[in-house]
Image 1 (cartoon, rainbow, N blue to C red):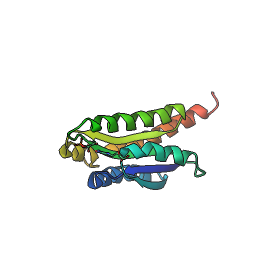
Image 2: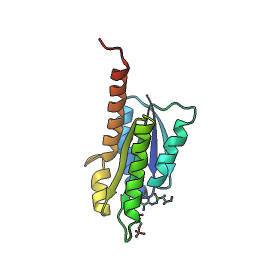
Image 3: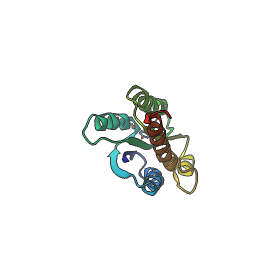
Image 4: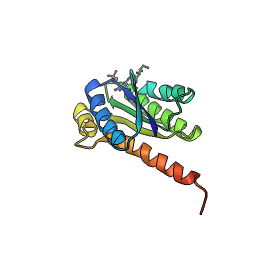
Length: 144
Ligand SMILES: Nc1c(NC[C@H](O)[C@H](O)[C@H](O)CO)[nH]c(=O)[nH]c1=O
Ligand SMILES: CC(=O)[C@@H](O)COP(=O)(O)O
């Protein structure tokens, strides 16, 4: 399995924690891993679309990022648009995408979801990719 992990490093420490959890899951599964860093969550969907149009033939994509509410409505747009774009890619292009972009009110909530020994949202997103690849493989096999 060839997996691309795209990490939005807007909050570097939280992103590193998400990445640690995701890599642990993928390495345990023996996946071939390529890592890519983008500035923020809004850049992740483009990176996936561009990678998919390339020649590296990824079996799945893990999107990692952290969006923390600020003073304005920008939070809503970053959260909704990044999630929407990932869903559009997953459905319209039939891509396997694990969404590990956490959307939280404060840093405490972010750390609780990013740490692999707590809610491990990065590991969960990676595992979702592995499960969907397994499901697609099962669906592609001839019916018995
Ligand atoms: N506020 C957060 C952002 N904002 C930046 C956008 O994602 C994007 O990089 C910018 O609008 C330029 O296109 N990104 C996060 O990942 N997390 C945030 O909390
Ligand atoms: C989620 C965001 O875009 C946020 O970091 C922006 O903060 P603010 O709304 O205070 O400009």
